[in-house]
Length: 426
Image (cartoon, rainbow, N blue to C red; front, side, top):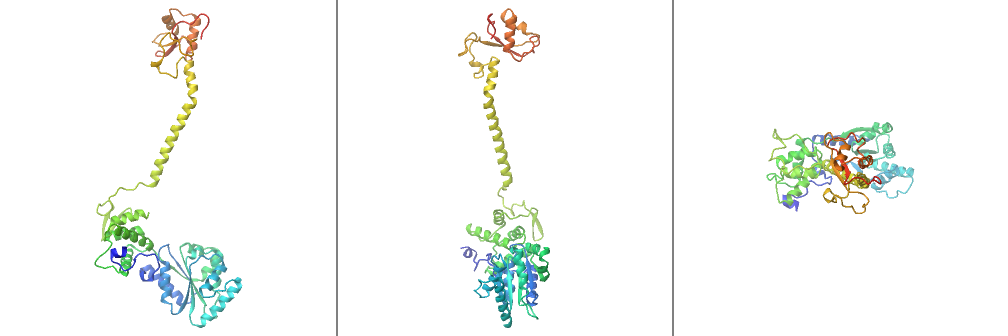
């Protein structure tokens, strides 16, 4: 459906390492020349390193295919854990199936095969992909393979291809002997912005695109180049997803809005400065260049808001639990001061009435101390007299009063509705 929609013969941004789609950038031309020269010169070891997605495997296929008439090729890409696995994988690829023998017997079998192979005039080239995953013991076995030689030439050429970690491994002191045998180090660097655009156009042309009917706008191509950081695999992913989106939306032109959406979905980096098109810097805020949809809230911000809200709710819950736990002690303190903690003032019984379950206790009233008043004056004013036992009863009812002769204006004083009985004080 996608090919029919864009009028293409084949998928331009596939994931298989097809040499027909190899784009000859400056870094790829240099690495390809190094590989071919290393093989033709019979130097023994050649290393090729690059970041993931730079097209190492495609480049290897291209180099080996150019020399297939003069060499025999073994391409090892499977997981190799031990020296025995390395020799067995090599022999199986050479057509020798009886590999259930000791390491010494396997090496002897390989040596006999290499001698016979050299008589045909074709040297054996072994390419080991993803070599950064090889253990130290396997790399040492790889080094030993270079010992298969005659007095005039090496019987085997070895290409180690891997990510930058391979260079770090070879730099270790214990890898000194292997590193000294590597005559050529070829490295692939990311494409420049112009090369990235040419890379896209090259793959579209190989797939049968009509040059007079471009699929990507110039601004879209520039944004792809910036967002991919010159990594061919990223370019392929962006272009494939953008074309799928265009096909789903029945659009034959992929513009910058579609690329912006795809880049955001793929979580790829976006340039924070500006996009330079035809020599002019266009800021990201330009409406016709960038998508107008609202910016996405970063996940870290959402997580922070959620944690803050949860912490606030937890504090409120703990506070409520503390209040509920100590409520009985609080109510008891109010009752000891003469208040009914479970009812409002409007629901308090009338003066002279008996509270249910507390008929032995006289009903209370609360007065406010005026300026210059003493507790004795209040007692005389309310009861017409102030006997010592009455004064003591008032003090007992008001635990905040420590000195009857020193009370503060505005302070509340709890009094019985009538003087205490002469028989005692509650």
